[in-house]
Length: 186
Image 1 (tube, rainbow, N blue to C red):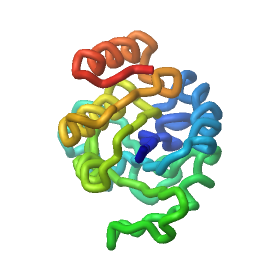
Image 2: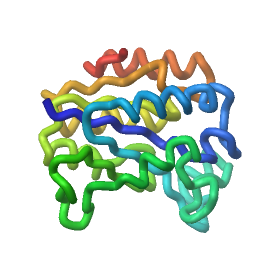
Image 3: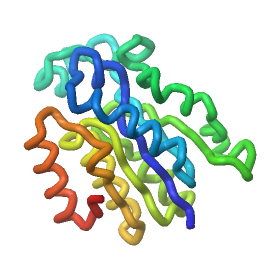
């Protein structure tokens, strides 16, 4: 069975930086342990903004400069960065470098969810997709919904104990919304 773990936006700005939370900090090591033992491919998403962020629609609604491409806040948290260094997938040719090894890739996204990730899941026929990371009520839910929209017959599962949101209540609200859309919550 082809499985994919999607680690959503575990970046410095969302964990210990300007938008970090205690809840996000608490899930880092558990995500690391889960990812290291996962028996499938791994995709990381990176919230990616540029100079002029405050002039965007998102910047006007969330006026906190964060995840600016190339900055320390944009980088994956130190505990997980080693996993991203084992990249075994060539995004240009859309092929595994070594077919016998786990593929690891990163999707930079300029909005909450990655259409490219949804298309990728479909193209490579993943049968099960697991999501974890931050923020449950914004980027996790957006990526889960896109994955389900592109792949209605694929099992999409959110690992609730490996996700965090702005508040514990917004975390629960997002999980309930995903259940309504036939996304499994584990």
